[in-house]
Image (cartoon, rainbow, N blue to C red; front, side, top):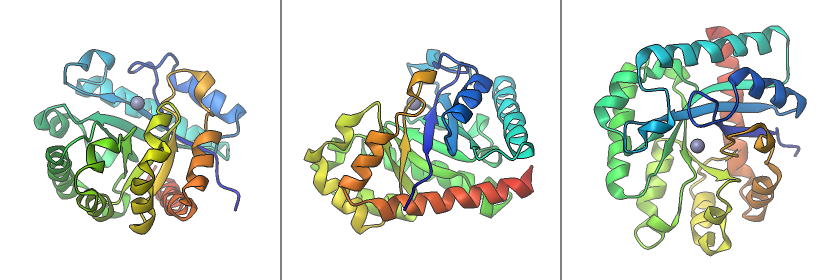
Length: 249
Ligand SMILES: [Zn+2]
């Protein structure tokens, strides 16, 4: 099977990326990518300085700018689908997340720094809050773990982590900026992903245009771990999001 070319982890100059959203889209079209997501940082932790997305006004203009690009791509019938994403730092406060992120506005939410069982509880709590506030249940955003480091859970109970990912339908990201996180020393972790049919995705954590299509190595590793069917689960979800957005906007 020929897989679509996707990079679901890109930063623009709304946070610590170098380029504007429109430049990222133009380059992605040239590179013939099929799915991309703009996922700027959202945080009020010690690293709050990395992002401008810390007030409702800026978040609105971020969402608006992506919406305009989504409409443009659809109007021109381009083979590129753009997702409206955000990367939520789990060291942020619960109130900050609940107050500023309207779940109805996003296609994709990445969580960064899931490193403990406490952070699993934190995410569950946020998701339950969002489920109460979603207007169209079919349009609940895709959820993923950004550059997840398996080592935190390798010594503990992997099944607890797997059932969490399964129940909440959260994907694992093969992130080309962090190849050590898909090292073969984590083979057991990847066997568990396969066994539990956890979706997997590709994200490059691009901060400049040069890394937008660093997708070959992650794809090789997905194949190496026999996770093609897990990748297909994610691709089906992306297709659904694309269809829902056609009606939505
Ligand atoms: Zn990132």
